Image (tube, rainbow, N blue to C red; front, side, top):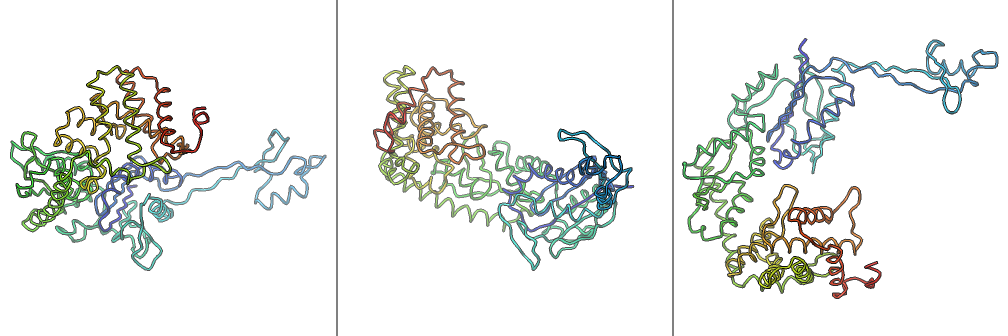
Length: 523
């Protein structure tokens, strides 16, 4: 008998960010539910698109596994009398548990002899437990938010529009909210909105592909990369941002590539700002020629390319680029250094001063580290300058609009202010590594300021008792500590961390940012 199980949950458009997270978790969530319900199988496939969750289970057993449980009963002396006969209490126990004398055993425990019985629970038919498992599965998904869309109590990330549930080739009838399970799936909502009759998983996959639905995220991603290359001329390249590729592959059911362009006048804006605006706001791919940004960009859309889609994307991006141009021009009315004075408007941590206080501490700590590393006088000046400017871009308009440009904006503005190369690069690099996959800073300025910044944050968190716990680390103390360790080990730096921490504590004391005395803190 064909023991295929097919579940398809059709929805309104699901957020790509949710699907990216769910894609890494969903197989384990389903397998855990199958294990908890004592059901065996030989294969599990899960596919996600912007409008559906498709689950296929191969050789799903027709019945739950039986489960046996050993249950401890009354003590031996209560069950039997001195003559070895069953007492009235023993007979009452057998009647209450619907047992016979043959069902019991006697076992020695640390507390003496006890009566034991083995209770066997027969497994239910899989058809009977499927509705329960599907509801358990849906309600256990890690939803960032949920919503209701009808008069039932069902809640989900987006409204559910259809439900397919087949086992052994037959529909398993049950409801989710006001939706009844059936064998009717649907194709692409724009290009093939008609019904598809589901019989087997292979036929469903083929029918969906003919209906402009590519169910496998990995296949969509590969298709997007190939389609982008075909959409542009050979002398052009596209910034294949992996995070953006993941995002757009979950924004569509069948990817189409639309080549768009913007006015060349916007190329006067720094390319990092343009690229970020294109990727962040338009979820599109910037196009380059010989590593130089062009006025083209590529959009992945869920419909066949046409002038309306092209003009719409260009119009939206034009508004964003106008904003970026305005922010950039406003920012450049003063030098990067002048933003430093406004850092006093930003608090660093509760009762540990402002960001300007932090900059003073970072500069002082950087000088100490530079001396330990035996830098030349010129190198020390560059490190001090980098430390002084490292947080200045926090008050710029462009970083306010695009927080992900923090550091990059500082580098660009420092370059425009004719700061030395090591200083400007160090401003950007001191935020590295941002995560475990990020590269380490490379310049002396970036390495030293990165260490000073993180050590200052770690010390400040411990002063205010904001230490990480077993389950929480809201101030990223562990991440900062690992970054410090990785930088020191990678570059084999001969540093006295204890001395650097003492100097950092002295800075907090000198700024009178906490009440403890110097001796008690150092102790």
